[in-house]
Amino acid sequence: MNKETYDLIEEYMLSSMDDAAHDKEHIYRVLYTALDIAKTEEDVDMDVLITACLLHDVGRKEQFENPKLCHAQVGAEKAKGFLLRNGFDVEFAERVSECIRSHRFRKDAPPKSIEAKILFDSDKVDVAGALGIARTLVYKGQVNEPIYTMNEDGSVCDGSDSECDFSFLQEYKYKLERLYSKFFTFRGKEIAISRQKAAVDFYNALLWEVSSPYDKGRSALESCINK
Image (tube, rainbow, N blue to C red):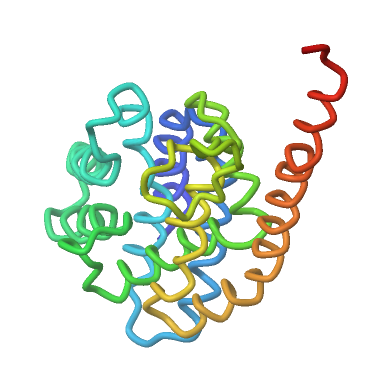
C-alpha cells in the first residue's frame, strides 16, 4: 500500500470517529496490534488487513444514534461503498467488508479469512486488561449506565446474575471476563492473557470497595436515627 492510498483511507476513518470509547487512538492500537499478530501468521494480505483495521468502526456513530443497529454490519457497508467510490476493485472491497462485518463477536458470523481473524483478535485485545476496563467505564458513562446496581436484598449485584440491570459489573462478568477464550490466533490470545490479571484485580477491588460501605453502613445509620 502506498502512502497516498493509506492517507485516503485514514482520512475517511478520521471523519467517522465520534465516540470517546472508540476513538482514533483505539483504531491505531487495533492496527498496531494487528501488525504484531500478522508477523506470526502466513499468507496475510496486508493491504486488506490495514484497510479493515482502519475502517472497522466507521459504523459506530450509526449504532450510537440507534442501538438497534449493528455497527459491524453498518460499517461493512459504509467501508465497501467508500472503497468502490474511490476506485478500489470489487473483490478487495468485499474482502475488507467481510472482515469488518465479522469483527464483532456473534456466533452466527465468525471471522473466516486470516485477515478477519486478526482484526477480530486485535479488537478484542483492546478490551482486555486495564485498558478494556477503562474503555468500558468510559462507554458506560456515555450511555448513562451505572458502575453497579443493587439486589433486592440490598446487597451489591456482582454482575453474575442475568437479572441484574445493565452496569459495569454486569458487563465485566458477561463480556470482559469471558473474552480470553474467544481468540483465533495464538499471538492475539497471548497478548490478551498477559493483561488479564490487571482486569481481574480491578474487578475484585472495585466490588469490595463498593460493597464495604453497605456492610456496616446501614446499621450505623439506623443507630443514628431515632425511631
